[in-house]
Length: 296
Image 1 (cartoon, rainbow, N blue to C red):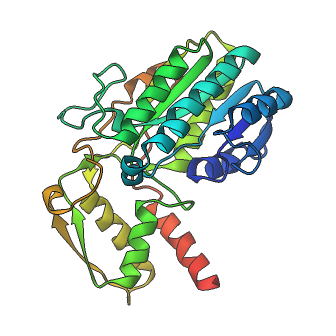
Image 2: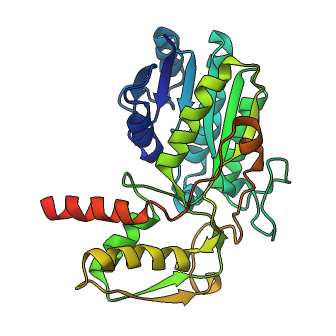
């Protein structure tokens, strides 16, 4: 039986992998920081060798984009140096490594969708450390699939959808950035894509970088409108007014990419996986979260 090790299993994507790998033919070991602290290189090596997986899926990351500007060493430790260690271990035990990366490796100054071989030029510490993590994997000698994605949301963890629902309860009006463009991507769809690739590793698959995100390009303002439309359908008494805002009017420590659209044609060509519908699951997630809130 093929054994899979999921690192960072308590996060957004790790939780979704738990859902998608349930009742499959794989033996899956889920670990969070309490079981394997990827920042502890010796512990990580000892435990991965002990588990002896055929495939490692690394979803552990330092994803606090603004905080990364203030905690550069920690961001580099988790997103780069720890990834280098994991990749070298995977090479040593001859197993596949799936690793999740980001649109932040690009500068966001394009007006056409980024391809896997488009020039990278991260504008902040988060994007830089994630890109260096990619380079570390590519130079390690291990077999790897790197998946870059963007604007991830789900019923788990912290994300834009859940933030909007919380702020919608707390405030009557919200100003949302309207000039940053990207493709909202449901984390369950990323997990499904990974699961769809797994059986294809039996054939001759070369290591590579792949883009995978939702099929609809929009602004954060447009995304928020879809979220509140779904929320108001469930609870007519809750109505939040939202207004467009320019990036220049909203100060953040880290510069955000103005354009984060990723070209997903390569993953379709190589694995038959098409970009998912960006907004398809918003209503069901809002309904699920609304139900949980009522239970609380």
